[in-house]
Length: 217
Image (cartoon, rainbow, N blue to C red; front, top):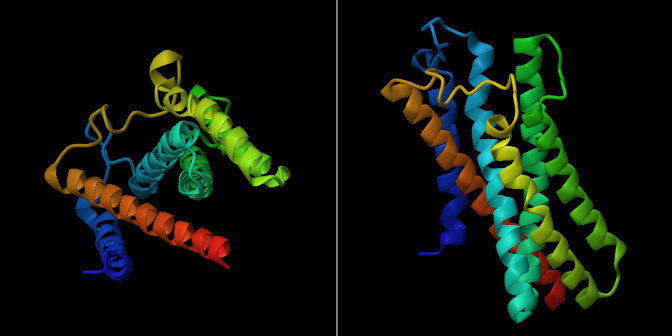
């Protein structure tokens, strides 16, 4: 069985199922007082998986960077580059969906809340990582410096995740505040997490394959 051939179909099917779950009436999100929060809150079904994939992608950059410095090998540098590019896209989408949510909830697209600010910093760190790579022409030097940067930059991921516990914030904690309850709502969130994780894996394998083709050419 060729996983590369069936993965796109599995990913597409899972995404379709996930979207059907999101727009089903039973997926409505409720506040602490069991009042419905409105359809705009359903964006969290996308916002949370996007954030998860961004953290996952940057963790892969972190591990790949360590492995490159330990063993060398171009494949680890390619893994780091490929995952960083995907992570920057997903982290950018986290910011966009977060801003849409903020507008509906707070009436403004942006406030300098700790979670929003640390998420922006995380995106900037890995955007800088990609800019660093594009600025250095020598492959080995680029890979070494990018690996060091990729390891250091990863501190932004746990900082972003734990920011709502480290500082005073108005960022909603839908997952732990009572909004996530009921089998259908939990299932809807889980299927979206799976779907977006599969999408990351597919994009990662595709990006690595393209980079390998450039090397072999």
